[in-house]
Image 1 (tube, helix red, strand yellow):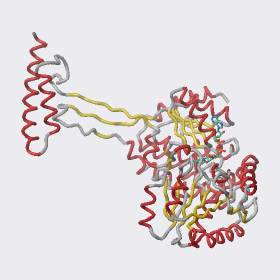
Image 2 (cartoon, rainbow, N blue to C red; image 1 turned 90 degrees about the vertical axis):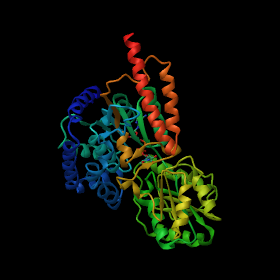
Image 3 (cartoon, rainbow, N blue to C red; image 1 turned 60 degrees about the vertical axis):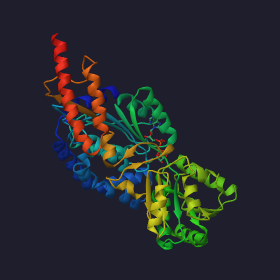
Image 4 (cartoon, helix red, strand yellow; image 1 turned 45 degrees about the horizontal axis):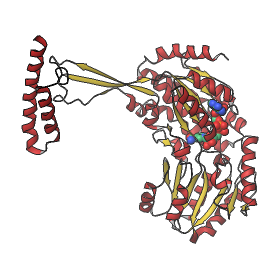
Length: 476
Ligand code: NAD
């Protein structure tokens, strides 16, 4: 693989692509969306083969939610990057107009993990291309074939060179960073730190979507059956290999025993697939062994879903991302304690609150320290293209989805046109009438009510005097 040849092809293709109208680029992406849907079965099959996940997990996460992604990004999602007229005051800036537009950044380097190997890259590929960029896409070394299939679908439609596949592990990721103008990274905190450091050394912008240790706070008045099902799903879907998996559950004491019982029943019945890699399996086993060694009780057996009780708060399974089907459940005195413990983490991706008292939950949500808060649901908003997905603290500062994501893939350009015939008040000479006008302007801008009108007249007169002064100074 010759990264410099790929990059120069990307730059050439981007120059023409970036000049196309949004509508024209939208037509390409719409066609890619149709082809992606038509090859849906193939996508699911390759995702399952490479990640060992269940077909249900692949259908509901890697395929179905991505079908309307193309419609959103070729329609409403583009509003944020359409050119806008600047709201210029004619009095403060006479004779001027300006436009704010957005230019593509150039070549976006996209580095992805293996847990949702189709869904995650799509959420960047589509807006990055719509914004007029070329993309160098490095899938995880665990899921190269899913990456290759996506690129094949896109490249059946896109001009050659615009989207390129870079296969490999860390070294390939580093090459992508070095070649790109902007980097979108999704992965672990440890790798995110290395990626951020490399980008910083080259003064490159980077979006970081990292790990989580998300909590569910379950209040005594919740619908117990539905909450248990929702929390269990959020902890064990994709075998827990979800950045926003519920990895800690804080339950109000009055319903604690019943809630643990309901979760344990679900764990005994659910067919949770094995985790994707040996390395991931080793982490899950380490967390499980550590918890049990510290006195925790396991309900269920791994591989498979395990509900953990009597887990000390400093056990690995409570503090480090597990990325597997272990759900520690801890009793708390009340919602306040639950929320404080939920916030007591170095991560901050999502928080879920479960109660019938929605008003109370909305008030608690204001104090939840995470980028997403869901009330009576969990984790699934990543599938909503209009909903910003972002973290706090070590979960990273990137934003996926929504207008905020596409604004990260463009550079703003402000073009000002001046048709004013007179010199500007702030040009030379900077004495005499200039200072008087500056004081008049201060009075005018801070005036209220009818005084504003009088002072407007004062400023207009001051401007006239000032222009006279400047013209005289220039000629003399
Ligand atoms: P990882 O950090 O091991 O790898 C992610 C990607 O980075 C891979 O493509 C890998 O090859 C590449 N990489 C490795 N070293 C690199 C380097 N030095 N420079 C550049 N690239 C390098 O993560 P993973 O195990 O593939 O994925 C699991 C992690 O991803 C979990 O921590 C999970 O929480 C996180 N994740 C976060 C989100 C989110 O939206 N916040 C979504 C999905 C997954």
